[in-house]
Length: 336
Ligand SMILES: NC(=O)c1ccc[n+]([C@@H]2O[C@H](COP(=O)([O-])OP(=O)(O)OC[C@H]3O[C@@H](n4cnc5c(N)ncnc54)[C@H](O)[C@@H]3O)[C@@H](O)[C@H]2O)c1
Ligand SMILES: O[C@H]1[C@H](O)[C@@H](O)[C@H](O)[C@@H](O)[C@H]1O
Image (cartoon, rainbow, N blue to C red):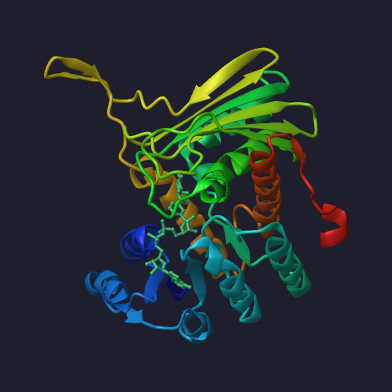
């Protein structure tokens, strides 16, 4: 079988990481093109990776006949237009989260894909491919812990860019826990409350960081999330599920404990590229295998839309200081 020819749009932090992954690690696939408005950056990413074209216009990359499948790693605000083009050209697409930046445009993506009659869009909720999250999912599904009752999540980044304001903390960071909660518990989130304590003094005025969210699920379960994107120390993502007959915790980072220089303990990863390296590898390999067959193998456009709807409610809650019901279209009405 011929290699799947992949083009990547947006080669900043995440896109460059995916470019290297596709070029060096993913079997049955080849990186053939990258696109970024910062063409110098695109050229610098492409140069060490072999025969990779730089295409200035992302829509031209999507339409290029020698690009079989697309990875979108541009900022969230650019996803809606680029996803529409991928659907128009019938190209299997791995779109980094968030699907889009609002509920309405996410629903339009779901509807446009549905009209094509086959799933083409996979959303980059990579935690589903992380070995620890996957083990937790299997444990919960096995019933060993009884009915899941509670999920406690911690999501901390070392620092975030100045443009990363309160809305981004919800739509770009908290969105991971929205997906993890829906996926682990297999239920929709129906109501959201996002609280913000007095912010850390280490962010610009007006940025609500950290935030503390509570998700109410359709089956009566509850999830809480601390999201703190300027924690200073490093990258920490933890999660504990509590069921009727036990609990399970992942993300403790305890696999290598060292004693040196008068301390003992483990390392704190710098960012998501280290902590979730395996998850990204598995995600992209499984997506590439599925894309070669013309489809997807992971979180769907519907998952991206459902997460966007929860984030919209979360932002309203953050602004108004009260719980907000999630407005989600009926799945059977949208997807038939
Ligand atoms: N799954 C994860 O863990 C993870 C981690 C980081 C980022 N992300 C997601 O990846 C995406 C990119 O984030 P990032 O941190 O790499 O951002 P970044 O700012 O580092 O890079 C974005 C790149 O996109 C380019 N760009 C800007 N506008 C564009 C457009 N209209 N079309 C194409 N390219 C454009 C920029 O020049 C830049 O090179 C976002 O959706 C983000 O949420 C996901
Ligand atoms: O875009 C990134 C990415 O999604 C990371 O996985 C998350 O930890 C960050 O908070 C977010 O800014």
